[in-house]
Length: 240
Image (cartoon, rainbow, N blue to C red; front, side):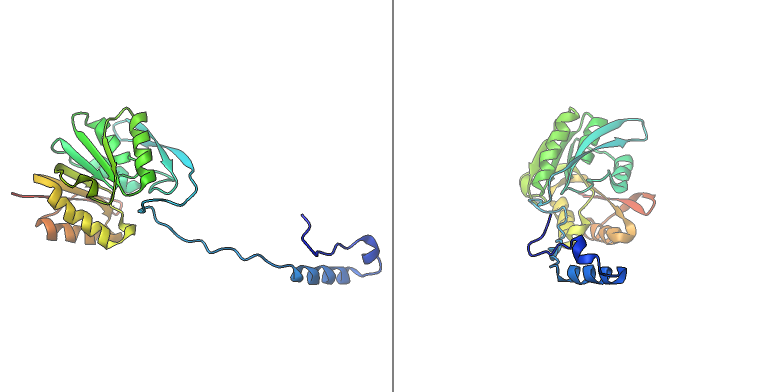
């Protein structure tokens, strides 16, 4: 499309000019065009209540070692939108499922909680996330996978003020900062029944070692359930 005040050169303007002069003429003209400044792109991590990114949905497939396959709808603005990350897969393969009442906190679009309910039908699964879009798609994915789960929206344990669980499990939002994952660990101790466990997954050299240390500080104990490709699954038990 022609810009305002843009000069158009016809054959009569160019016929007496040398090729070098034509090139120079067009170069000088292009310099006069105003270049529109691009607005700086602002980064917004997924641990927010209302994602601002344009909604696009991708269908992802989770394949477990036992041959079971599950399908999830993954929206933009939620962690793991491009693929189901390795840490989540490791957690699902190596977590020790104990007790009946299990909370998946920071559930994203529901991979951990929904898969656990499918693999262990007798458990009661509870799921929550601060991200409203994550909660919406957790409910969609639960319905699509024929799973009943209590899914709520809110910051950390706010949706579960008067609840206690046999187990709390999570791929914690390290990108949200240590204040968040420390509060997740502190709150887990308060929301676990005696002998209940907290099980978290992380890359050991990318924040996981600090998580492990803090779990030991809060619970007085911590073990590593697995070491796989730099990923660890940490477990702490609330002792009597």
